[in-house]
Length: 137
Image (tube, rainbow, N blue to C red; front, side, top):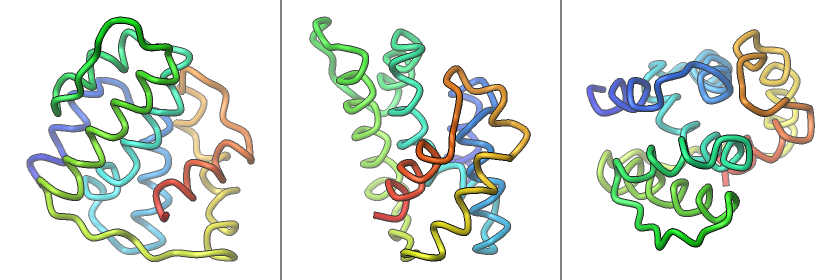
């Protein structure tokens, strides 16, 4: 729990990852910090094109390596991979098994969640679907 709570502080802004965590946590009956840990990797990859320097700085925390020549998308992918490693290997969280219609049901809630408005990138239905599939893949 401490590590999950720290992730929230390290990211230093409550927006789309937090929105997804509200929905995932309430629907799957899990603690909010744990839901945030699941949401962080996909959210970081999603916002990287809008705020690459911030995502890169965040990626250094779990040990992402950067050469300095990465595109914003590559920064997002490397940061996401480092956080996935942290979430699944360091924290030992199990992958979530949610599929198909269940994911579709969550998409509308994620896109309408109030904190989504604070995200550095606008979140539409398709974006929410891609991120949720990334969490549940």
